[in-house]
Image (cartoon, rainbow, N blue to C red; front, side):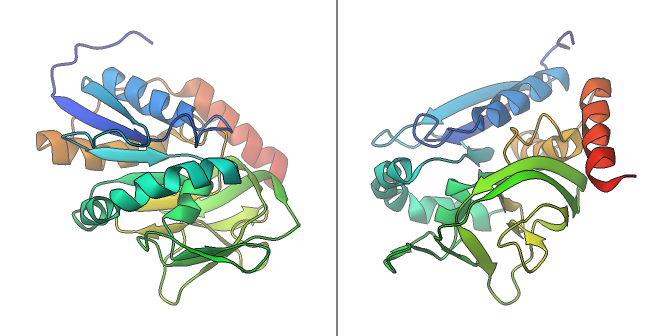
Length: 246
């Protein structure tokens, strides 16, 4: 798709720990948002935030991905250093999408198989416990953004705190824990989810829902262009039909 003139203003995208926390293709979420911003006529400015680096001067939307336990350990110290800043941004309404490992780190705590409790940022009221059983496979959700498709691959079992809104209701797949029918968590504009894929290219409505919030904050308005999402929509619908038979 040809880019339209990017004259509607800048939108700054911050990707947290792209080396350590992007092992299942979650970097594709950042690339998707940058491309869609250009297609809509905005100028994406992407900041890759690495452990020990100074925080970007501006953050209109923040993304984080999945990683192995070793990757989570490597980012923990830096995440703690910027914890207050991230909590303030979340409270101020900055849209955030945290996938898998970063979803867990944005929760209250992760409890290891051995019983060690590792504190999280507490932006989302979720607690995750490690276990020996992995939850793997394609997923279909009902969400406020419409149906969402993706692929889960996690051993952590996550439980929502009382009053915590899930990201979606599971129609196919395991979700947070395989038992309560919930997937992910959402507080204001912060979304946590186990869905890889990466999830945003397969779900244009979710991508643009997040971008609308970011663009309004960054430029004072949201003036989307007409984007041809035929290929993404067909792939999305094919997964829904295959898994749900409808």
